[in-house]
View (cartoon, rainbow, N blue to C red):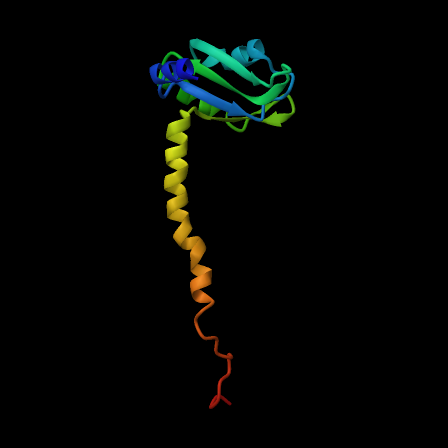
Length: 130
């Protein structure tokens, strides 16, 4: 993982993560799919210990511009029988930090209903309406 992080640092902004890959897509097919957008420095379909595709992978381009073009063209595109999800790859620490930041913004909103439930409830038509 350390080596992967060093590679990811080098290609910050040019490394793409994709998921929802069809099981028939291997490293070579993935490279063919994305080679039209620029020079690919590495390409990998993630597999479980038995060699079965996890349906996700990484493609690293030489420049962030090539990666951006690939995202624009390929995200949501039907590949074999599935719409592909393509985004910039994030290192685990970066993703965790972003998710924690999102979670801390969401939490107060999620707690609001419990605050509201302690407020006294009045019937819609109280005394004197008639």
